Length: 93
Image 1: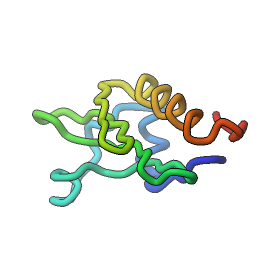
Image 2: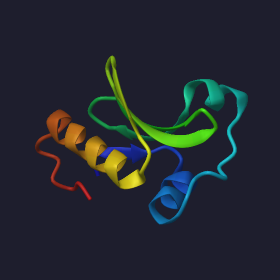
Image 3: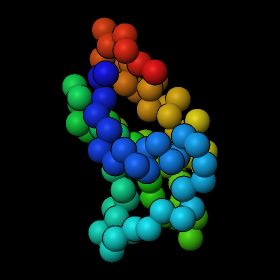
Image 4: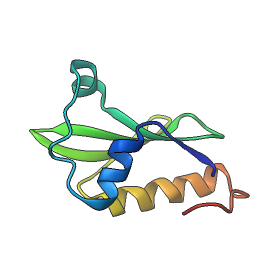
């Protein structure tokens, strides 16, 4: 795999059901909960964030950030960015 799962429990939950019940620490409320990071570029990350009381996914890469309400849209965007970072990584799932 060309990415590293940081929070396996929440990563797996996001794929199967809602993450609205995931508790955040004070720091995670402020900065988000890191779920996945690219191995070749640690600036490419997928976070779970809380915005206006709702959990959303945030794909961050360098200075850019894109917010998604749904897991699949966020994951597709992360994988698209990952393919740019590591075009030889053919283990993308």
